[in-house]
Image (tube, rainbow, N blue to C red; front, side, top):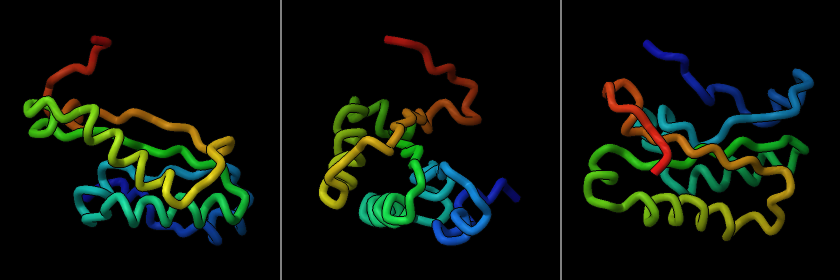
Length: 109
């Protein structure tokens, strides 16, 4: 089981009167294999409907251990940048996937 983040589309969120949406959550990327392109399309769809997007980016433990944090985060942001010209309604949330359920604590470097 899980929280099933992302089971509502942008049109439904707007119909409910919501103002914000979470896109790119690690649960969607991992359990539903949403890639950077799919996430970018969801961001654009939400913005096109007037929602403010909270865009989750972050690396897995394997990527962190391989020193790919910056590379992964840049790649995830670049996918959105290709489709979205204005970022005034996007909030970027760094979600260190490696710290979820691992017992490892994310701290400032």
